[in-house]
Length: 284
Image (cartoon, rainbow, N blue to C red; front, side, top):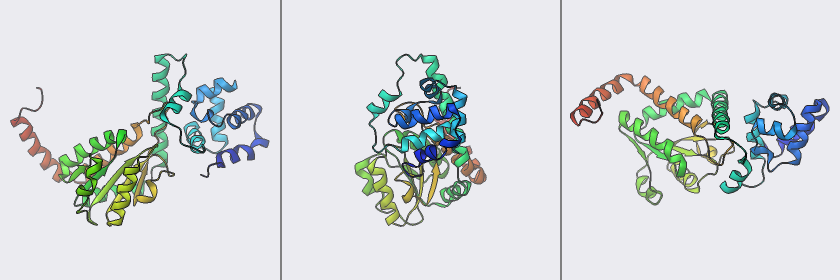
């Protein structure tokens, strides 16, 4: 979507809007820097309409729901806002903790729904196949995204024994020195994107390696560098990204790989159980 297309939709639909929808549209147009960070309930409160009316307004403009409209409004901003700016714009100083947990869990439920709706199943199935067939798997993720990558590395390496998360930014060149065209590089990146992730994926492409990117939308700078793309919604009303949807995609990838390779994986897990018992790993 082009930067101003969301506002073009609002303008083009003005003639058929209800009175309540016109109030919402007017508020969004007049508050382009703050409105994109309001939840449906908060936007409704500012405009003076019901939350259900805000949600219907998003569908009226042919979005998949309010989170979809909100994401496009945020993408329309001309500049990247700092974490401090986002925090200031998403903080309700009168909010109560019980309101926050309801709001954020509700946002995550919507993120999961949006992710499922927009998931390209062909890319998912091909990603599973490439994970299974790769000689080596390298995972690239920095800052907060490294948390999901570490989880993925733990389970893939447990069953496949060929997966490595490159943790040290300065050591990337040594780790990828021998990368080949039958290796797979998995890159995680969410707004605001780290330059190192983009650079490493670009290098992997130049070396002929296959690439899979897991990112937050098709405007991500990681998308052009991925042979396969899995898009996960991460927006919540906070300065942090929510990783519920990306982690669910990782859960699905690991589960699909292990089910496809169940004979090999069962044998591997049986061997590991003996090892864990020998070293008394788990509390009885």
